[in-house]
Image: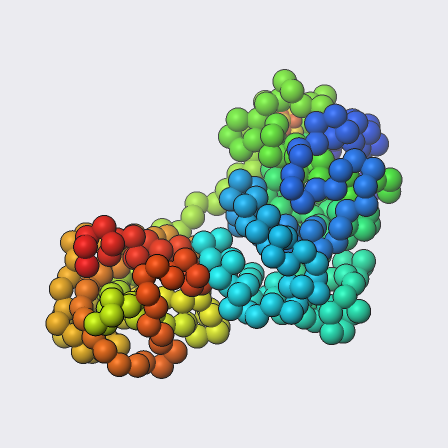
Length: 361
Ligand code: SF4
């Protein structure tokens, strides 16, 4: 049985057995993932990095097709560094958290310009690169370079909280979980071990309903012994998300082209393309207020219904107003509707497009 005492650094009884069992289980049950090296093959750091950036806050199923597109368009780091930011953002559109795409592009350029196109192998050096935080640095160091590191993501947190029966709720438990996770990392095959824990969390030690009967380390698991596994890790109640509101202006010209605008480089959806809108705020919009923020004068017609989207920190409700207009606006461009697929439109703006098309703007 594993036990965890934060004040002690010494290895826990059962750690070696846990490492052996988990690695043996991984040899038989490792998930086949597009970015994973085949058994016995050396992982490609470019693929590992690309997948780890894409997988932040995003599921394996969603990432798969994006990963394939990126890899076929930009098969190596040099190709990605040579792409324009706009091309990268367009290929990323729909994956969300767009700062990741901007940092991905910046990181590729830094590596090519200052590191000879090679990734550093040390966690501490990896963390100096754009978009690579503690988790991603540990993941790349472990998976790509077989360095002893614990990439503690949600799967790791859940598995470790249960193995050691750490009852402190998240996020307060994070330091204890990280420390306990570090105590498990073996000297031999740390990269496979990191992925074994990820796979165990993704396929066996599931949130709310762990499949303990199928678990290779069930006999070493404190939460299972105490019969509290489904309850861990505890989570502090989340604050309610506020709802923000805005008006999106669907403006077409005499040639049927749509007015789009590029958002500022920094901030939410930075660098992405949008249907111009008012600011997004919690207060309702009076008509005169909204008109004051319209990019062009037009004879507006509100479309029925609303577009709803949820961001990390707030819900958004957009009304869509349709009108005809002419002229230029800062960072604006007129785009024919059959070229919308070529634009870096984030998911919320794709919803606006679908809404306008549905209601026959
Ligand atoms: Fe998770 Fe159950 Fe395995 Fe413990 S025994 S690690 S709770 S699946």
